[in-house]
Image (tube, rainbow, N blue to C red):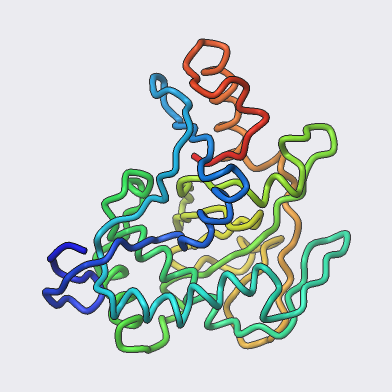
Length: 265
């Protein structure tokens, strides 16, 4: 704990070590790697090495941390694990049945907001307009809905490769990337990996034609299809793996062959 201003309630409180991406995601990864994972930084000079950093920061008081964890993090994690809904995978993707779409959407936006207010290095690229950041904060704190025009939440599932074992469907579930940013003419998007699913927030809400092939979390239907996205077309991960192999070949690695390990950016 350390004293400071809580980013959610804006009160002077003792702040706890808070997470943007839920800590349970990192615990899952570190458990598979005996308490650590291989960290690959997408730059020229940083060595590839083992790390147990979970990208936390002192940003929320205990009361607000507990509130977001109980209302959203626990729900989101359990949905993607299939514990609070039914999951069925077919040739086109994974269908979730029995979900609360608005709660799932707000979970994603709460993660995005926490990334934006965190000082953790991994989230440095996540920048939200002040008005958007404040609207999400106020809605989370006052337990109100976040306007649909502010952002759309899209969900796809990475489809593994049979030719590349490191990119198998099971391995993809164990990978965490720093958020990736995409610039479009009429909107921007910020995305991240979550148990093998690509979750992307589009701001402001784009025209529906731009969301073709993406499961959209908006609406009220209890059924949501997350279509498959072939891993070979997912540039943020492929670029990172290429960078990791280049660093290994250049001697900028402290882990031997990173191909054998669980990965995070």
